[in-house]
Amino acid sequence: MIISVASGKGGTGKTTVSTNLSFLIENSLIADCDVEEPNVSIFLKPEISKKEIVTLFYPEVNKELCNTCGKCSEVCAYKAINVFKKSKSVFFMEHLCHSCGACTYFCPQKAIFEVSKRIGIIEYGRYKDVSYAGAVLDEGNIKAPQLIRELKKRIDKTKNIIIDAPPSTSCSMVAAVEDSDFCIMVTEPTLFGLNDLLLAVDVVKKMNIKFGVLINRFRENSDFENILKSKNINIIGKIPFDIDIARMYSRGEILVENPKYRDVFLKIYENLKKLL
Image 1 (cartoon, helix red, strand yellow):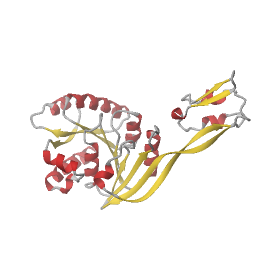
Image 2 (cartoon, rainbow, N blue to C red):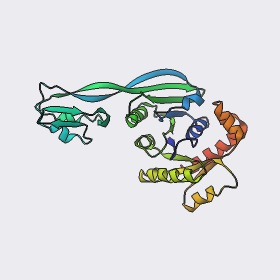
Image 3 (cartoon, rainbow, N blue to C red):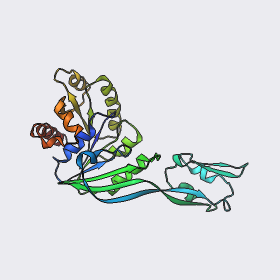
């Protein structure tokens, strides 16, 4: 089972939800796919047992073999390679490259070869009964979707996986939630939160992923719940607006270790199981 936790904007409480659910779901592994701002380890505090460097292959051109025929530029779907025949030069833009290997494969002169370059690391660990895997993108690198997919390839598929996704509706969010059995969309009960939530809901609908909304910082007198119901959006739970939750969060504590909040997350988990 793969459950992703996503939202339309940052700061809604995705990590709070994913980390706390990981303590309730049996045989769980939490994967921190917010590779640009990972913070699951702040709350989980896992003992790291292994780290792996992640690399991608990028093309380099042997100028002695290249005759600037332009085939590499022709087959590159992302226009990462451009050939200038008048100056007999090849210009490569690494940030556009998706490491597909097409340019190397189709080069008639075999003038293009691939070199490996680091994009980030993946670390593995454990805290109590919860397994952990998280990826960290190197500073200055923009290959977040590729690192997320690499993390998802390497995690233990025998576990029940909870994915802490990056915010918004970017390529990184799509890479994180794809192949999920269910996506929990976390929102805050504001009009700003609603706007971004609906954008994220459209994304998971187009990806044919089952989803439900969890309202964080919920106030009883809020009309937000009725707005979601009017749009036929399933609500799988509500986390109350509570100063004690904020205090526990600021200390990096797990909410389900407090009986009062454990019941809140148990209800969310029960509703999740019904929808699954």
